[in-house]
Image (cartoon, rainbow, N blue to C red; front, side, top):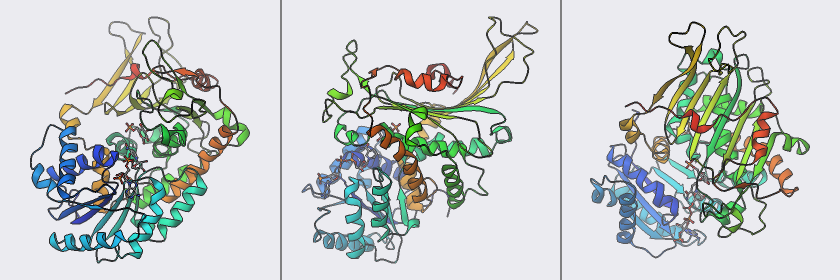
Length: 499
Ligand SMILES: NC(=O)C1=CN([C@@H]2O[C@H](COP(=O)(O)OP(=O)(O)OC[C@H]3O[C@@H](n4cnc5c(N)ncnc54)[C@H](OP(=O)(O)O)[C@@H]3O)[C@@H](O)[C@H]2O)C=CC1
Ligand SMILES: O=C1O[C@H](COP(=O)(O)O)[C@@H](O)[C@H](O)[C@H]1O
């Protein structure tokens, strides 16, 4: 199948009236349609409890697209493929109506029985829906039946195992597409290309040449109206268990023998397996946490004042950690991660810091030490790569000056860069599961995280410990200082955009 060719399919979207569908899924489907990446044989059934009809639903889809983009060509043609069925997922009777409508649309659009079941709903419904899809014959067609599920996949290892067992009653692992939207981001997908398509990097990608790797994902927003969910999650489960560990595994894995999904997955799983497990008594040596307090100057509330948050909440909104790999490639190289809400900057970056050269022949005019070489991967909002080098200072024989070699997606490229969800939906339709998380990765990442969350649950934190709109708790800096490193300031690392 060509890269952009997508088989005809029916998408059945559970949670069609929800926030994710409105903000991400409809605009992504529309972009795929406009780019010609959706087969003309496509139809979408949206379901939720609200008593909408096709017209109300189509207007809702249209509005979500109008709100997200200024380009609206063929929008009426696009929304004519959308159908709505009021449906309570816990009511067994309403699956029959869903099956009837699915079969009708299958015939009307010649969809060949291909079905994508997209669960954009709270995870407690996943098991029930998966059971019904099978028992009520919705998966019983001649085409493919794929289940796309949103995070969170459980809240610890036992709950993830239970959820997995539930959905595996109805779907094979190969038909389960667990979304981690960071894996749909252009520059996260670029990690493999940077490593495996450049003679320059792979020979240096080990503990002989790299001193440490830093991954930061900072957000300016607070918890917004998601306090209820966030109270049960915190930054550790919301960001570290999935997005941050996924980026770590892509950076740490061995080269796969091909870019086939199974081969990449095998190497990622091996990377997860070689992460040094923590013990309850060592957790605080490796991981630190924070919670934002109010910032009166900027009139920003503290986390404990947010909607649906316990005024004495012990939930962390910031995590920094050090991950060690006990394998030949990475022994001794810390992978530092940090993520937090209400930081001064919205930014996700990876900094690969190389070791110093063995002997210094040059000096800097200000007597500062020469800076180490850095490879910076800009994930968002800018997308690009910067290599920080030292070059001779013009006119000075022995002096160096830091220089940057930057590649940034230009304005046109950025406009054409597919949204993470757009790519992932397209992949799921084409049956490419490379950028989805396999069960083994999910279970290994929960095993790692559970020790930390258990230790933190048993120990009350001194919260709040950073004011909103500041760079996080002091303990985060100390985590690196004790190893002789520091967090590279994100604003110093900006990519130079060249058009
Ligand atoms: N929003 C986001 O940015 C992100 C969300 N996610 C995940 O996506 C999933 C959906 O999130 P989000 O869209 O924000 O959630 P919302 O609460 O906005 O939407 C939930 C949806 O489920 C429907 N629903 C609830 N109960 C039932 C029921 N018994 N039967 C049928 N439909 C029901 C609701 O519709 P109605 O009330 O009409 O029944 C609504 O359409 C969650 O797993 C979340 O963790 C993941 C990443 C980001
Ligand atoms: O999954 C999540 O991710 C977002 C951050 O995503 P980004 O693409 O904007 O970096 C985070 O805000 C949210 O809490 C979390 O659930």
